[in-house]
Length: 90
Image (tube, rainbow, N blue to C red):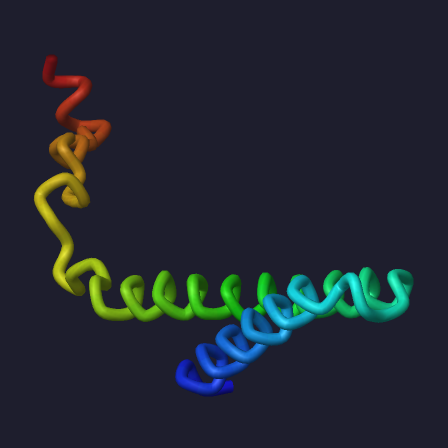
């Protein structure tokens, strides 16, 4: 889903929710509650999608560098392995 479509769905569900809450006195209460809950769930899903899209776009834009930093280089020097002859000379 594209981001503008999620924004349109969120806007339309807010309008529907506002119309349901404004007309709740004139109609059957049970259906109005069900419609309000459905519109609120659609609104929350669309807002969560928009929020996650911005989080993932920011993460893709700010990736870590490809080259290793100094902290990735081992700090210890390679160990020296003595031969048997060198050990006997000690």
